[in-house]
Amino acid sequence: MLDAATCPKHLGARAAGSCERCGTFGCTECLDFRDFKWRCRDCLAREGLSLPSLRDRATLARAAIGATAGVDLLQSRPAGSSPKR
Figure 1 (cartoon, rainbow, N blue to C red):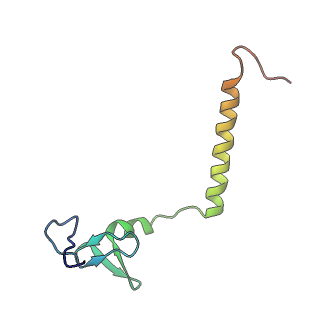
Figure 2 (cartoon, rainbow, N blue to C red):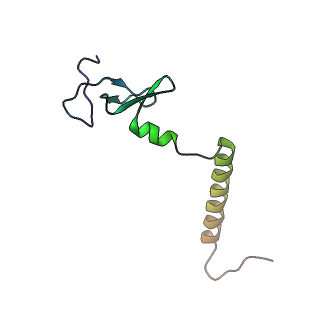
Figure 3 (cartoon, helix red, strand yellow):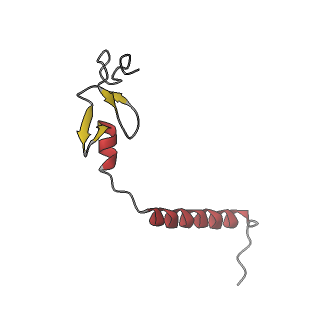
């Protein structure tokens, strides 16, 4: 199968392999061998980004859902009415 594969960024260039993260085929210019793994340049760039931990992302998601629900409640209130105190 690799015999027919070509590099998507360098049309006509034979693929030397595929990225072990995303599976994209690439030529020798587009693939990099680091830490015993083949990676395309796009995946190498993504690996350099730092993401919040899974717990922090879940906390942010819950806060966003809560804020959305609060806005929805405020918008569903009849016009001119004020919150009960």
